[in-house]
Length: 108
Ligand SMILES: N=c1c2ncn([C@@H]3O[C@H](COP(=O)(O)OP(=O)(O)OP(=O)(O)O)[C@@H](O)[C@H]3O)c2ncn1[C@@H]1O[C@H](COP(=O)(O)O)[C@@H](O)[C@H]1O
Image (tube, rainbow, N blue to C red):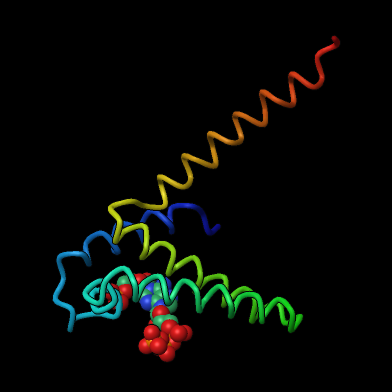
């Protein structure tokens, strides 16, 4: 079973690449180009995701979303953040919506 551990492993690798020689890997090279280049890749992958969804080809859509997730993880790592920060935010929201749901169910 594929789990959230893959995000942790990838985040770890992306954090390690911050010290790597730019010529040694795609990620290290992208870091060396700076935030603008990373944001450009995120934008491109977002557009490609939209186009794949409109195509109706599910495999293509999954691959483009994987590219988009990957490049947003590169962005997070470049900013000193990781998938864990986003997962914590989603967990926090789940907690909030749980509270809101309970409040809505409570008789007035
Ligand atoms: N998951 C990925 C991953 N997904 C996509 N990509 C790369 O992201 C790029 C996507 O760019 P495009 O599709 O736009 O194609 P492109 O024309 O090659 O891109 P550009 O040169 O124009 O930027 C490709 O070069 C892909 O190889 C990835 N590169 C790396 N990883 C993971 O990141 C880890 C560390 O990567 P490196 O440090 O680069 O080895 C690897 O072990 C992998 O697990």
